[in-house]
Image 1: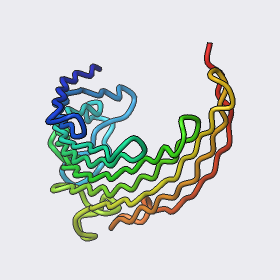
Image 2: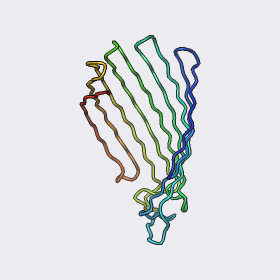
Image 3: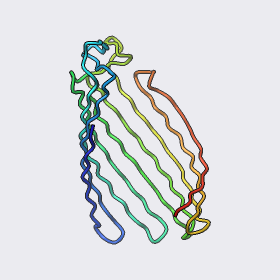
Image 4: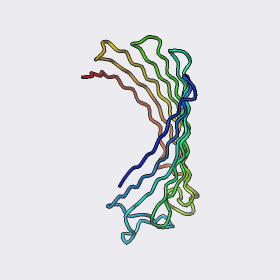
Length: 184
């Protein structure tokens, strides 16, 4: 199991920056057998082992002192090292907006859309059910107020909707959080 990331950032001008990253990682699940090409879990199959390779590109733009907008695109390919059943291509788009009306108050809004395309996997791991796909859409709102230089209070609300041809992985959820942060 390992992760390797190389990232580069470049300021085009004082208000605009570009970023680029390359990713490579490996995950091994020694207690979970891999699926064969029919989606079957046989005890004779080797452990699940996945390699991930991908890239991210992003751009951030500041508008004055108070507003910043950002956009990221991420592409990851996962390779199932056994027979490729759980290979996938993941594409994600993320938009962010940050507003700092004062030095002590921050507001952030974020939205993300992600698609997973499994070229060899089947919905419900059943060949007659058709190919497996998954789409996720999420959004969040975050606010933070710095009471003192060391203490701040924050709140976040968000929602996520996941749809899939395999109904076992589809869900919708929302959350809300309230917290305090103390810096040493």
